[in-house]
Length: 290
Image (cartoon, rainbow, N blue to C red; front, top):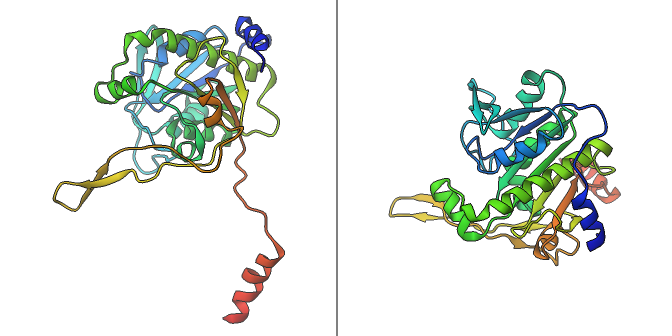
């Protein structure tokens, strides 16, 4: 996208021409996320909202669901917005929100904005933010997961004390506005062709006019996450450093590296092509040997 196109898009008001319909908002950071209220302010300009978030942070829970325990629902107000909390995972919130709490099937699931990026395959498969959006598209609802890169010191402050440096208020506002722009585009024209959902990752330099780029998903690993803890045979989380496999060209990781908002269409076609040789090996060879 050219700078002229980016500026034009940034000036466009995020209005939806069709009749307003409800958007389900969830996240994996809980009701006390400092990104939640700014996001609700921007999205409420577009449409009605149903907000269902976990009662406690549920990062790195992917699409896990609470099958065997009862989930407690509570209502509260957050920054002037009525929200509901659920003692479950982000995917629980999306599922119950769609099927039990929204008065009608939502037009869109917005998951996020996550504190920290979810770029690359390794984070995408681990993220509770993305997991909630996956649950949305499985229920037949267009879904989008949004994540924001934070400076390392700011992310550490959030992890230790659940606080965000006020110096980042402009970044938070910009991320909320960009999220509303993209949500409005989905409500107007739908997801990218062939996509089940999208994952959006915003750099720590995000402004309303930041370039936006449709990207692929980088192939990544996060290496060893745990280390031995003390003298006992225990392991504890130690660190996480994303490792890029290959050059990552045209990927979400590359787009973030150059300061662009990475918009990644995701398609969950998990089956691999089947070769004639493999048919021979697995359908005939094994049975003949037995």
